[in-house]
Structures are given as structure tokens and as C-alpha cells.
Length: 136
Image (cartoon, rainbow, N blue to C red):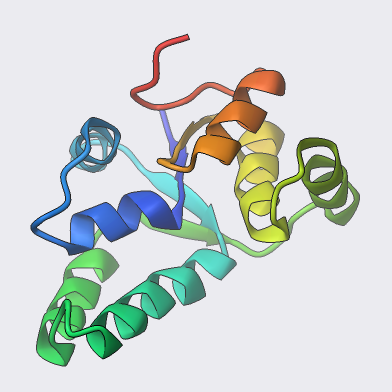
């Protein structure tokens, strides 16, 4: 079954020194399944890489290689968020609008969310949205 993947999970995939069971589970699911993300995911992932380049954590060539690999994964970008619901989720759960967009997509499509963000996990649980690799 498809799931929503956020930038925190993709960031884990980008760096060899980061390892997390949720990120591993999401990547494993992508072998046989599809994921979705709000359109902002494209920008967030690239911003993580550029900031990491500036901090000398990753070389530009490594970023390019990661983006090539990432493009091969079945992640569909959603460009039709429900504005009112994104705003409600952000206000109710004190989330950034960016995080609320991931939650809204998971909620609207009725699929699980893969995230490492503690505030987003808390909000997903409050909204009864399933989480990849998270216990109750």
C-alpha cells in the first residue's frame, strides 16, 4: 500500500552516517510499493543537500548522485493540497505549514506517513494517521 514520505526520511537516505529504522523501512517498502509527497518535498530534499554541502558534510558530486538515485524511486509529487485542511492542521497541532502538508496528504489519501519529525509524529497520532515503523 502506498505511503507518504517526508524530507526527514529522505535526508536519512542521503547520508551514510545516518541510520534510522523508519527510514530503512520506508526505503525497503519502495522496492515493491509507491510513495507520495507534497510538491514541497522536491525543494526540501534539495535544500537539505545544499545546506549540507555548505557545511562540508557532503560533496556536490555526492548530492548529484543521490538525486539521480532518488529520481529512480517511485515517489509521486502531489500538487493539490486542501488549503483549509493544511491550515487547520498547522494551527491545531502547532506545525509548520510544510509539516502540515505531509500530514494533510496522508490524511486525505488515507495512507500511512513515514517521518522522523517528533512534532509531526505527535500530530499524526492525534489525527489517527498511521505511521510507518512507529509503535502505537
